Image (cartoon, one colour):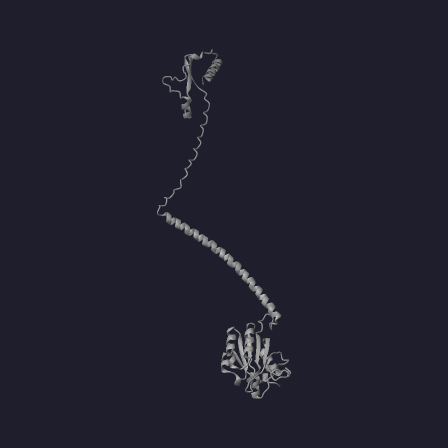
Length: 331
């Protein structure tokens, strides 16, 4: 501040015409306060109190004192202190629970083993379910293939349905014990048309086979088609099974077809739905029971007076020839 004050004093002297005086006459020196005047604040104090009035300096001229105000530059703006950075909260340490006691270690190990076994069983169950699903698909494909094969076999065998999309006709096999039926008809004095009988027993059914078991003479010179038990079945759709008559010492003759007829019925029963046995002989009772046990329906066709009561009892259905003469009798 002193150079500025000296310059100001020289300018005043030039204006009033007075000579310049040496600056030694200054009464105010830096750092010394006159009596009765307040002490000049220092720079630090001025910065601390920016609103205080600036200090004045006096100089003597011609025995008079003049007070001049010192030119003080405006105080620099006080820098705004920057807010302190937010305190970083120290990361909280994760509290660890107390270590399991030695007595709890086996229990924890057992729990871990059980969890592992449960996971293993779950994986095995998923694998088994996937395997079962694959096997089910294979079985369904096999079932479709078998159904298609059965349809082709049924078509090749002539098992056509009466109505498209309907159920196939039941398969029937007709087995005729020729001597048993013809002797009963002779006792009544009537003649049976076995062609009409075949049509009656096979209607609304699929005829698989019709077999007639007829004894023949032991004389090879006699023609087969003209013999008594063969001629009624010729050209009527029957398969004729023959067997020579047996002559005994007392002059009687007999031809027994029980074994042949029973073997044919048992052999074909797996491919039949209905077995029509044209005989009243009680010896066939056990045969009827065996065939019925396979799920095959058995019907007995004979004259009432020549039919065994036991055979009639085990049959699923009984057809009395005498009550249906209009269907069986020759015209």
